[in-house]
Amino acid sequence: MLQSLQWAALGTGFTFLMTTLGAATVFFLSGEPKPRFQRAMLGFAAGVMTAASVWSLLIPAMDQAEGEGRFPGWLPAAAGMLLGVVFLAALDAMLPRLRRGRELADDAWRQNTLLMTAITLHNVPEGMAVGLAFALASQGENFAGAAALAMGIGIQNFPEGAAISLPLYQEGMGKGRAFLIGALSGVVEPVFALLTVLVVLAAAWARPLMPWLLSFAAGAMLYVVVEELIPQAHSRAGTCGFVTGFLIMMVLDVALG
Image (cartoon, rainbow, N blue to C red; front, side):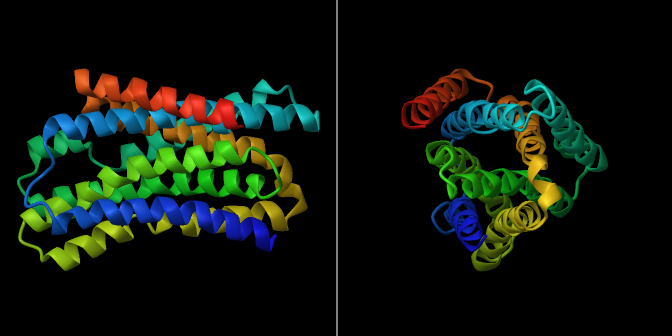
């Protein structure tokens, strides 16, 4: 168990570091990144996460379910993915849509608070996904897939950290405090990763739930990709970034897995 926890902490430590590095851009930039570069980065992250959801989460979930023999391999993957989508959609329904928020709210602080809340909530299933993937990798199962998944989520976390710290600085907050708030939005990933691994490894009844949890995380990530990343990345630069990210993730996972 200790080794699995250490590996989970290592994987989510990287994704948290990427959030911190994104938040640190407040020390180097006085404004937001150029739109073309930002869309390309978001598209790249969307491509990596889409491929990671398939090869690092859904396919391992189906393989594990078939190995246990309790359900057809596709059932936990399909049901877990649907639950992940519903979970994120429910969270989204609790928060005002960011697009509508820009039109209806004049209070910039309220917008920044909503953005920070949404990003922090999205980091919860991402931490679960990385933690479970690295817990499996510690037992000799698909280390390349776990590493690629962490890379994909880390790439997404970089612009998310910047998306919190830069607007806060632009509204008059000090750089140090804006950086700290942006970095802390990613701390939920290692926390929930360790909690998830503890539950799965400590309880005998929780082991059969791993295919469901993996596919749940995949559904949650796919929801984020479709609802948040792709609309913001929609452009030729974003499309090129998506294809590049998808290909890199696919090659890395299939060739090294």
